[in-house]
Image (tube, rainbow, N blue to C red; front, side):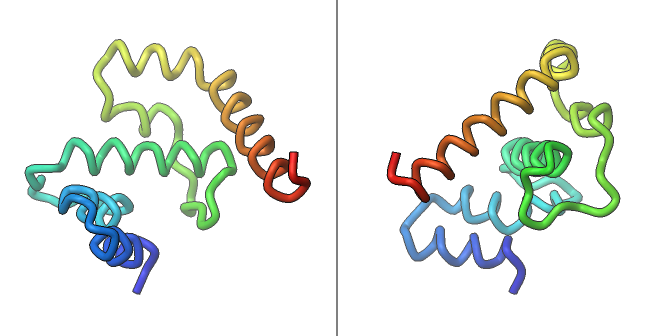
Length: 108
């Protein structure tokens, strides 16, 4: 069982919608031909790749996917904005994750 299948199982046990089960199970390898929830699966897949690129993933992909390839699944305006804002976005995400980690370990 990989982490996607584990996520599917957990979400089913928690009574979450089937679309979320599919996202958990398929986010590392979106299906071809696309399923009815393909857009959501691709969005989570891109987010997973962005986490890899920011070195925030527990199980990073090898080789890392380039930012231009990751954002290619988004509409043109979102692509432009993400390319422009990525360095600041990555810093913001890392800061927030570090704040959470510190609050959990240090009781802040």
